[in-house]
Image (cartoon, rainbow, N blue to C red; front, side):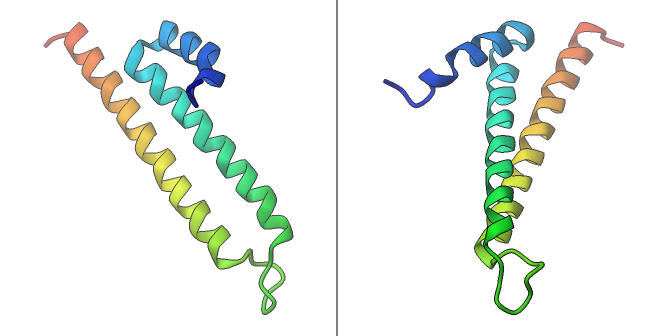
Length: 91
């Protein structure tokens, strides 16, 4: 069983709506968003001893990296859409 088998319905849905590449990116974006939510929930309970309002360093680093990955996926999806739109409406 592939790791992506559990996302087969979601992949099928988004690929049908957006095409194969953007559909896969949409599912990846959802997965990154879910990971951000889980890390955020974990960060609520894991605080530094120095500052109870700040999550521990590893939680902050993971959150920052996931946020950057999410932004990168969004940029690629927007680029693909712009290319599709420009090829559909030349001039």
